Amino acid sequence: MKVLTVVGARPQFIKAAPVSRALRDAGHTEFLVHTGQHYDQQMSSVFFEEMQIPEPNVNLGVGSGSHAQQTGQMLVKLEEVMQLNGPDCVLVYGDTNSTLAGALAACKLQVPLAHVEAGLRSFNREMPEEHNRVLADHCSDMLFCPTETAVKNLAREGIKKGVHLVGDTMFDAVQQFAEIAEERSTILERLNLKSKTFLLATVHRAYNTDVPENLRSLLSSFAEIGETVVFPVHPRTRQKINELGGTFAEQHGRSDVRMIEPVGYLDMLTLEKHARLILTDSGGMQKEAFFVGVPCVTLRPETEWSETVEAGWNIIAGVEPGEIRRAVTKSDWPAEPPAQVFGDGRAAQKIVALLADERSA
Ligand code: UD1
Ligand code: UDP
Image 1: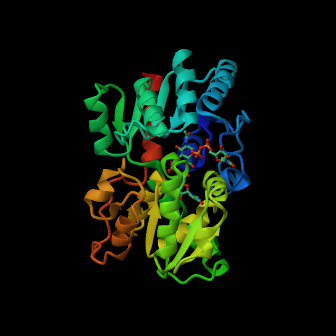
Image 2 (image 1 turned 180 degrees about the horizontal axis):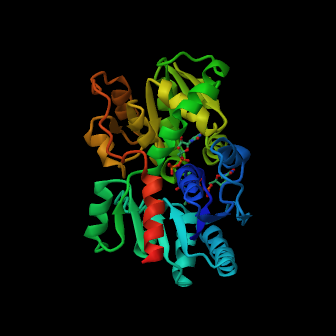
Image 3 (image 1 turned 30 degrees about the horizontal axis):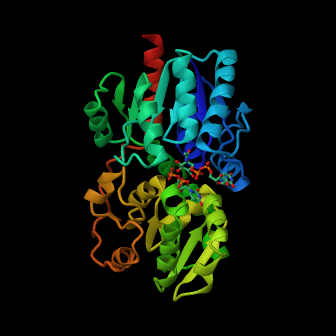
């Protein structure tokens, strides 16, 4: 079987790593296309190196731009690559512009399309990701869902055929790399941090970065928490903080806010595991907090990962400083580690087996 995989943004490298490995292990051929949506070393190549993802067969070098520019350029280039390559199926991940372009290109060429992390919904149509995931799901032939909720979301939209509950490949990745991170990461020593004495924060959603009052509100909340806050800053957020007048979260307030460059996956797994609590608007990090049993405060008005909230491990705080303070000072987090609802760590193998079955059907 020849699978053409489309990735382009940081979380997609992580989601794709276990599947890429499972494809190789099962003797299939993967043609890996990097759209170039993320391109900084710390946003892209660090994940290929650390997670031993093979070099992409082609990098489309699309880079940053408006939604239309970025998605349009990807679409044109992907069509050409898919025509030249003639895959048995195309595999797309998650909800970025790279996902949408890959899905549309495959669908228009009538190449069987498979979507990993299908069925996720925030029910917030102001999010660019919500458009991308809805559209990708509606043109997919195979839909690999991480949770029961995702399967139900698809059913509500009339999508029942080709839907498979396989679990979450990000859970697979954590299982595969937790021990390696423990052995190799030196981030705690480098930042002089002791386990469970710091908070970990990330912010990159358009709603939080591009609305200045929301970004200000988050930065001043971090500054006022009164603890050490390790904050690996996404390049989009760095730009917007600079536009607001620099690094004031570090300079003012009662906290020790450490704004650092984005970190690699092994360092991030280590920071997550040893944080007292995680503050984030990242989808992937809400899940990873849950996987490692660290309380999470979500800096958004809603989440796609409702299971983490229902289990009591995630609080939806939005951007209001009062809400964030309340969540950070909460003391009655669950006593027991979360029961895992994201599969058994073998989602990637299930995906590969289902793809192969479909090919031979
Ligand atoms: C994208 C996804 C988002 C995902 C996130 C993961 C879309 C619409 N958004 O958001 O769903 O959660 O990736 O991180 O696809 N930049 C750099 N260097 C890089 C990459 C980006 O400097 O390597 C800067 C550029 O100024 C760029 C901005 O970040 O304009 C935003 O990048 P982009 O890929 O458009 O969106 P993200 O915010 O990263
Ligand atoms: N991540 C990382 N380094 C960072 C920030 C995030 O390795 O500095 C990882 C994180 O562990 C998770 C993924 O990137 O696996 C989440 O990606 P991101 O937050 O960019 O996107 P989202 O999940 O919100 O789409």
